[in-house]
Length: 331
Ligand SMILES: *[C@@H]1O[C@H](CO)[C@@H](O)[C@H](O)[C@H]1NC(C)=O
Ligand SMILES: *[C@@H]1O[C@H](CO)[C@@H](O)[C@H](O)[C@H]1NC(C)=O
Image 1: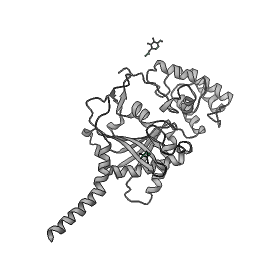
Image 2: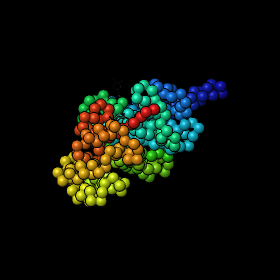
Image 3: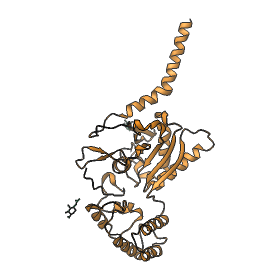
Image 4: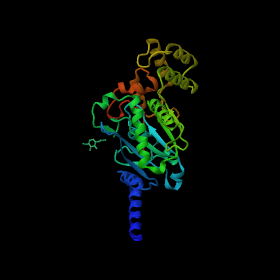
């Protein structure tokens, strides 16, 4: 009697444990990356990737790649940072992770990887998200979703992703959490942050322990993007005082997609004054491609260069609408 009661209890406990802990952990285990093709041998961190369904009816699923901090740096003590590239249409895996802040860079052979000395996962656990559905590896089974996507749904899907992702990775519940990104993520990041903030409101110890957000090279709106860009150029000695003044006067309150003739003239002047530099990394040596890229501008400045490149010959494949940056990789 006591024995069977005990076994029933055990069964119940194990069922409970299974459904509450083992199932998500099993999903997590399935997402574990043991080895990426061409990966260097000495990798001291864990990586995971997979899909999280954000809309059952449409069949929308978002792809993520989690790169934890090295085990020697105690990833369990470090925050979680969600990363978005912009575009809209830019892949966080292909761009942010592979060319900027991720753990690996791709060698020119296209087959092997090397460690990025500036990888952010030295300090934080990085969660790269392909957003919205249709970008990178994220997809929808309803084709029309690709034409009806907008900032609102992008933010809502990203929030649903987060809620479900934290179920799969319960060890990150209550962990310090930041939302970060660049370029058009100047929309994605604050808009998702606002949803998280609102859903957390009044909850004492929220699962998504949101601490803050950060955006680089943010697309906000034409007015502020112009103000910020011109001020950056001027305060970094890239343009003269008079060109700065002219830019402020002629490009004031104009659309960056259809700047006035006067504004375009001023932009052309600014471009000439800047010379051959990489606008995204003004202190590093430009490579030959930079000149080619800048030549493509033809004086047509668009806020933070983002839409500009989508109109150039570079708008192909996954880099559609991504800001383009040179990588003079020799290693
Ligand atoms: C999309 O459709 C495929 C093929 O039917 C299916 O395997 C997959 O689970 C669907 N995705 C979602 C998110 O429902
Ligand atoms: C850049 O172009 C110059 C002249 O065409 C060439 O000599 C040089 O090797 C190129 N450098 C790189 C890094 O491709």
